[in-house]
Length: 203
Image (cartoon, rainbow, N blue to C red):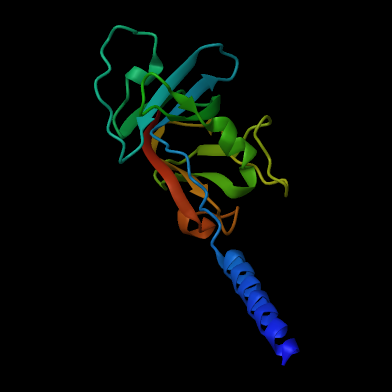
């Protein structure tokens, strides 16, 4: 009889500890908070030239207020339209760097490009070139970032032109792609962190 008095509380205590431990293990881990991307900049430099032209793309879904014209040197104050023209010369090569920002707070602009590079295994940049843009190609640059499998991120690229042509290009940043090779956006799977569209004119 005395044994039952002690054994029952011990069993109850053990059961409580076991249930608490199981429920703790089953608690979901907090979701990774993704960075806000509001601005993408393409820096285009013709090979053999020191002049760099910057094209700013406001990411859809993030409106920007007019920050004024007091600081004309601030590239982030002048957001271009969602669809713009990039003028290139025929029979030329260009080095292009993609820079990614959160500029929703103009007093605290965050350059999150390095974070994308650090998480290269979880990201992929893909440029979709329309068929009418013949004789134009985009390749990974020699200083591009490679993931753990040696696949290029395409955040630094080389653009090559031949004859006169024009057509649309859509650039995507893909999060957790299921494949890192393909000829269409669908081939890569994953989620789209952003997409920007522009028209290339080669003369």
